[in-house]
Structure formats: structure tokens, C-alpha cells
Image (cartoon, rainbow, N blue to C red; front, side):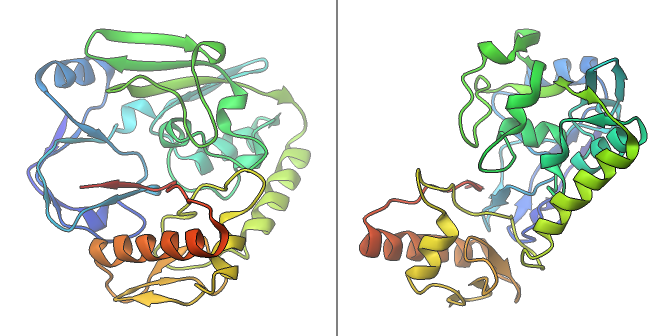
Length: 278
């Protein structure tokens, strides 16, 4: 198991901000993960870092990032088995090569499969939990397997117990052709190519029922609004871009201002999709 005594938070998140992680552990198998959980009173789990922002201070809570040993992938007929540390892009590449359809809606999403499961990543219409057959996760009591129906998942929430570390999943897929799967993935990627470039965490806020966060932020006059090195994207208002060495304090202040302005104009309380670790 790899252990890092210190790690800059900007190196492990796509927003590229934050202070110092005091301890980062990278277990490579279930035995190492079980031993690690048995001796940690608390911990933070990170995948690809595309939906997490760390504070500007030193993060004393240990951080766990699953290693390559959790990056397996294979399939049997219409069941795709995937380890939590494999990237969503890597999983979709496997689907193209093996003509497996059903997960194309995840195309263009950064991060790992484990992270996608924890936040139920997907489109407004469908999240990855809708494709789950069984999820494997570990906590201090050991390894567990849970069917989709037994997990209280919701929009942008996987429904896993506290202190659970997702280790793998079996997903429902269908047999197709490589050409059809590639075409569907490329079509989904094309939709996402218009999204802002630069350091970001993707969508900052969840879409409220019956509306879109980006639309509300735009109509509240916040496009291009800046605090320090953080600004609301002019391309998509639900993106905050770190374009000038933004601190996490800048980003948090901008998030607070956005919420205030949307509440004043529309009476709607936006809820963060990104996780901010203090």
C-alpha cells in the first residue's frame, strides 16, 4: 500500500485548488483496505477528484484513494464487472471494444467509476445507479454486496452507508456492435464539447426540480462574475472556473454569492453538487 505523508490538494482535484493533505493512503487490494479501515477513526474517500474541493488549510483527516488493484474490468454476457478505481473513460473504452451498450450516457464525464457511483453521476434523466445490478463496498465490519433496490439512491446521491468505500460494481449492459456503441458515445461527447474548458469541478449545483441551475444563475446576472481567481463561466453558468490561482476561499465565496442572488431573484435555494471538504 502506498502512503504519502503530504500531498498538495491541487494535485488530486480537477479544480486545482486547496491546501495540503496530511496523509493519503492508496490501498491496492481488499486486504490492505480492510486493514486500513480497522485503524482509522475517520477518513475521506476520493476518486478522480472531479467533484471534490479541499479547503486551503491542512487536511488532517486521512484521505483514501483506491489503487490500480481496484481497476479490474470484465464481463459475462450482459453483466459488466468494474473495479471502483477505473476511470469512466476506461470503462467506456472497454464497452466499445466489446460491443456493450447501455452506459453511453456517461461519456465525457471525468473521474472514476467509484466516484460516479457515490454521486450517482449521469444526465438529468439518468444516473449510473439506474444501471447497477450489485455494488460492492467495504466498511469497518467487512465487505458487503448490495443490490440496487436495497440502496436509497436519489439524484446525485448513491445512497451508500456512512464510512463505506465502494470497491466495485456489476452493471447492466446489452450486446450491440462496436460501431453503434462508439457512435452513441461520440454523440454524447459532442454534447459535452460545448462545456467550459479549464480547471473546474464540472457542475457546481444540482438542478432544482423543474429547472436548471445554469439557467437560474445566468438569469440572476452571474455569468462572468468573479471573486479572486474564481469566476462563473461565460459559457455555462453552472461551472466555476479557476483561471487565476483561485483559492478555495474564493470559490466558496463565489458559491455563497451565487446562492444569494438566485434566492433573491427566484426564491430557490440552490444545493451544491460539489463536495467541499473543510
